[in-house]
Image 1 (tube, rainbow, N blue to C red):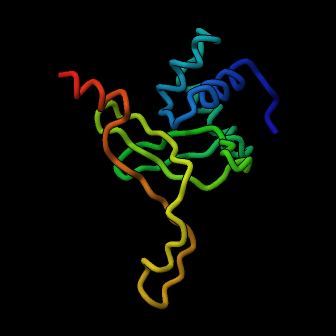
Image 2: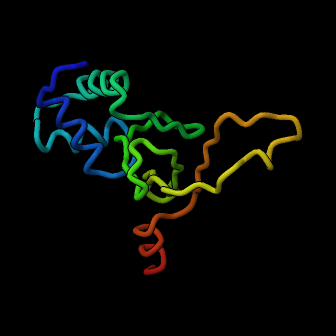
Length: 135
């Protein structure tokens, strides 16, 4: 387990406070509010350590670099629960969706075994949708 440093704490706080998936650059910008001289390379080192310690998860969307998010605690009180994502095509942000359509076995071909699934909705977040409607 990594010792707690200001850099590590600022990266974890940026992820926890944002309540969404962030790119390393976004994490760096947010974390620099508490550690102004924090570098992007330090953010990458901290992300690697936090991943290894199971304190954060990587979020992979097709065609994009990995984003990261803090383990969340849903309304179910279940830390790190299974959830999906919404990707905004306007601003590029990625938000967690704390719900799941359920069993995927009925969608798989007969005889196939579903071991896990990922679901990403694409569209406009509330900010981008309201900005678009004001135009």
